[in-house]
Length: 273
Image 1 (cartoon, rainbow, N blue to C red):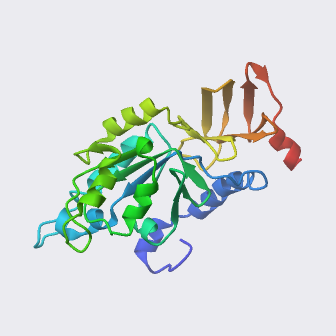
Image 2 (cartoon, one colour):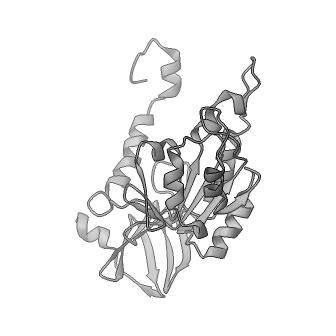
Image 3 (cartoon, helix red, strand yellow):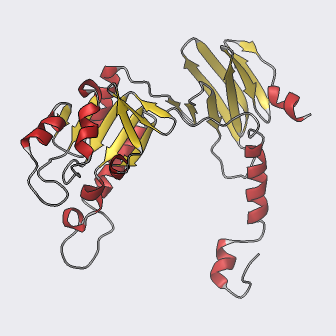
């Protein structure tokens, strides 16, 4: 162990060699620090009603015991996870609308550095009145609203005007609606921006990472097509295709990379010789 040698639980959580393995893994990740700073390019925003998802009134019996599964929150998380299997998406509570962190302009929504092509609202009941001016600005042709909406967050009945704001978009009655959402997003032509073990970043770069039990040197195989680019890679741990000046520069710790059938030089070696 490394800390609290008299505490058995700490020894169990931190067996000998674990911190060294974590450092070995982090050392591989740090190889990308000089060149990779863009976030994943999530084109879908999944908003969930904070009050609806977390208030015990909607989720649990009014008396103990507490249950590990919550009627609204668990369904929201499971639905979002299934959407994420097809589309990169951000899961954001409606409190970010209330505090002004989310912006809508010209029908499109922005959160930090990310612009979204579609908005999915899960758990629309008990929204704060402050959410509706924002939702009114969202392009109804790119809005999906799932779940009943009967009241505001103070329990007052939802006004007709606010109900019409929700009804502007595609209305789904059930929160368990991942397949309907996925089909709608595909029909709209929204970019999924994800691959097996990889995704598209906001600057256009592509990043793939290996699954494995070891801290490093896990095998990675990538065979995908992205627009006009075909990628074939056999190597270890990660493949980063940095997009710059209309072209892709590959960086990886070990392996062989082919872009559109041609072997390309590993620029990671150039940076760390």
